[in-house]
Image (cartoon, rainbow, N blue to C red; front, side, top):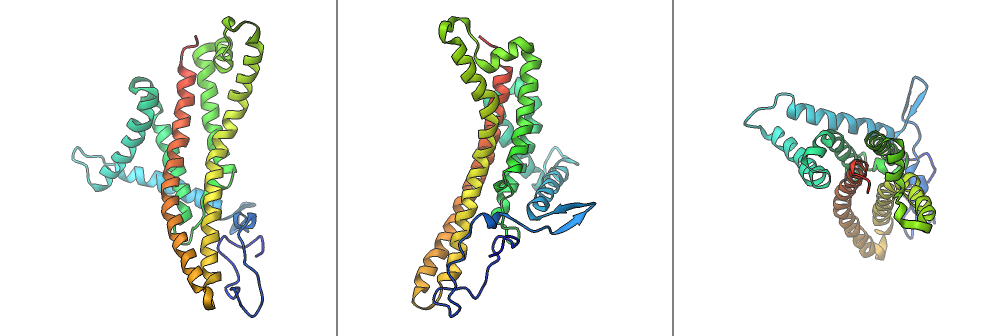
Length: 272
């Protein structure tokens, strides 16, 4: 399979015991590389970029449709929108930041949650069949937004000296180990946190998509002659993986926003 083919594109004649003698077309990094679909103004748009744009349109369009003409007695679409909004507001933001401090950050966190969730969800949508967040650039961009918000709030709340203490755990009572603690906390908070925030989402979606593609391709490859039973088992596993991915996709969106809220909470907390 060439690197410019899309995720599930492979030689349909390539099956076990096939006369052409081809081996199993195992998925790999090439499953995450796409040739440009079209070019606009000198910029190439590939499938993940297009899905990211569609995600933005879907999220903005849904909440616009749900709340542009909000009613006291909500309709079905408004009820769904309110349920999703309240889930993030009450279940994540309020639980982490409290109602008074957290209310101003609800729009940001709701936007991130649904943006991440829909980008994950493309993995199991026919035709799309690809989680945008399995490309590290997208989780990294979202983590950067959270990181900048966290840093700005930290120094705005505490000033330069207080912000430094907040990020490094500076405490004179630590005595001789204070320099070591400052270095470790600075490295952990300022450098490692944004990296792990992005990689946690990316790695889960990357691995999940790779497994899903493997079982899907194997289902077709094995359904030949006496190995048709093995192909059927692989197909069942693909269905199980789809259900499991549905769970993981929602959990990863939840965890990403939960961590974002915890960083904001740390920025607003008084240093002791």
